[in-house]
Length: 127
Image (cartoon, rainbow, N blue to C red):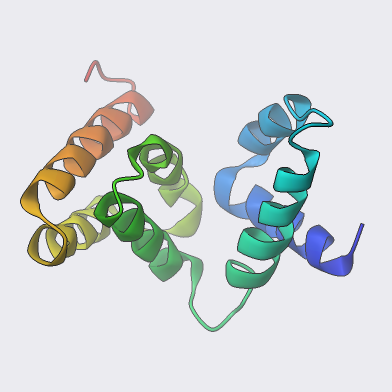
């Protein structure tokens, strides 16, 4: 693999955690190998590995963009990653308030619902 892949895998593990990445890697097949390589090199090895924006801020940007674009399936994963990125619950709420103003209240409302349930799960509570 390339240096960008190695950098991406290291950043992916730092942000998402070893357990998540190990599960994803175990589920990889020859069919989705090209996609997994692309996101590891592109998203993780290029964007997330660039030191210009710290992981905390990238986390907030990612959550806001996921919500604004209606890509809700990945929100719980990125909420769990806040433990590693340093984005607080207040940071996440501020990101979703921006979504409400600039992308729509229904998208922010759904993202907040997912975040609330994920935070509760992380804290061992029943959502």
